[in-house]
Image 1 (cartoon, rainbow, N blue to C red):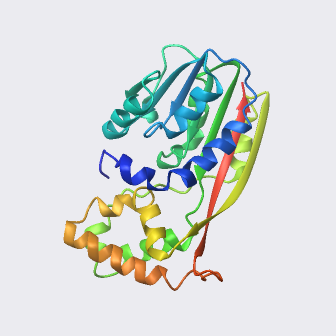
Image 2 (image 1 turned 60 degrees about the horizontal axis):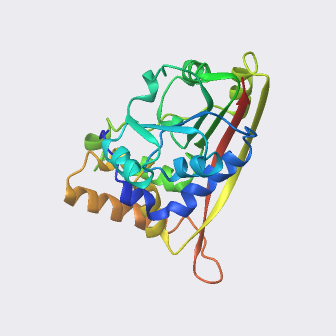
Image 3 (image 1 turned 90 degrees about the vertical axis):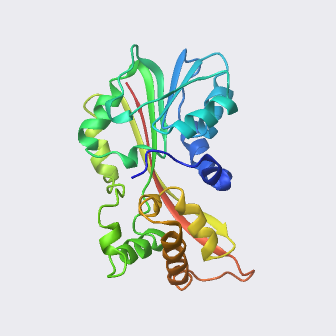
Length: 256
């Protein structure tokens, strides 16, 4: 998988991506945290929500993408951003809020990762995570099947697709031994899209990006065209001609 991401492409559906970040933040009852970190901050669309919620806090952001960190520094100069690997991230001091929106699904071994990140939360502080849980959607299954087809399998067999995340019960069992409070829920958003091509634009900067990183420009165009044609038959158009694109996400909030 490419080490970098495209902030402009990611923010093309900024409202849809930020909605879950807002819903997660609304369930964090911290009143006046001093130190807050956004893990997988991206272009700072979620970090800006944290800064607005807690203007007196020192806000940090961490992301593996140099392009995303550069965009974040421009978008929110009052915060401190760094490029880093969350899988090995260890802060020098604990945080009152450790927040991560749509990032941890890319990392494996949550049984080890999640408790380790929870250790970065100060006593009494809050841990808040949102992860897409949409692998069953045609927006991903169509491209998985296409990548495994004879035409594309040789080229795409090593694509670093994100692993499946655990169930709600898995995360509940994982968090309860160390947390004084745990809340979990799932939400299926219905994003209104103009057509199948718009759905492909939505997922090309995230879920199917590992496939695209392995293709030449001509191959990429053909792969997306094939996938878009297949996807067009998988969604029913509404009375106004648009498509409702279901997108399921899992949320976790815990207090240390």
